[in-house]
Image 1 (cartoon, rainbow, N blue to C red):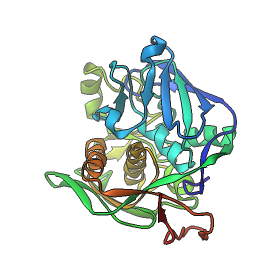
Image 2 (image 1 turned 135 degrees about the vertical axis):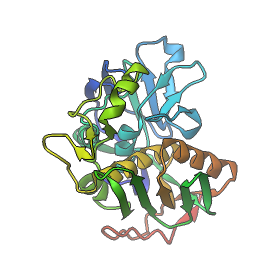
Image 3 (image 1 turned 180 degrees about the vertical axis):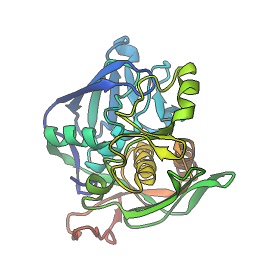
Image 4 (image 1 turned 30 degrees about the vertical axis):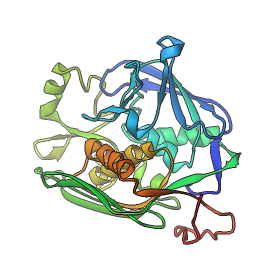
Length: 308
């Protein structure tokens, strides 16, 4: 499964997944359903009135970025913690999808994107008879807060560089770079779990957050050590998960990006601010991927991109 291609995609058949919300701690189910071309990624809340139920997965629907990304419609109906799921949707190259969900938060599953990727693979991919469009970055855009920043620059593929720094021996400074093509997301990123610190748990729960969090769906750090019995899935799992988060956040552009993203200690807020600035500055072209362009394994040559 890959995000590149010439035609729009949806899933072949419906599939259901369920679990607990990371912050609400409540059980929630999602039914993923095929959608026609030019629909986009659309959540439909089953627990509210139908006329208020639709929440579109798009950057300008983001209303909250603390400990996750929340999207909301103009009725105030929201879906929270969407980033892990959306990263799997993006990596699968799916452009159009209905998500019928019976609660306000996407299930956390095991804290990574791997379960969602599995469900999407089970559903299969169906090509639609409409051309796929990409958002090609045309000028460098950067947003910054203190020493933290998120930046995207022109590039003929989707590349990512990420640096994180935490004042704990369990993490320290970690860096990761990738050309987002081939199987990288599935093999090197999808299984990276969200993480947190044991001393913050009680504070978060008093604030009504992290009620569904546990060592079953997060990497937990206490006294400079990872306390999960089975340890880490990757030696640098923390930066891989931060990059996974960024993939989900950037997917809210509404179409796959062609650009070089760089994040330094960036999070959901800066990622969303970056997209808003890209659109505010009109720093992009909508382009199509012509059939004649040759695909090379793990090196997608997009030099023949043409403006739509």
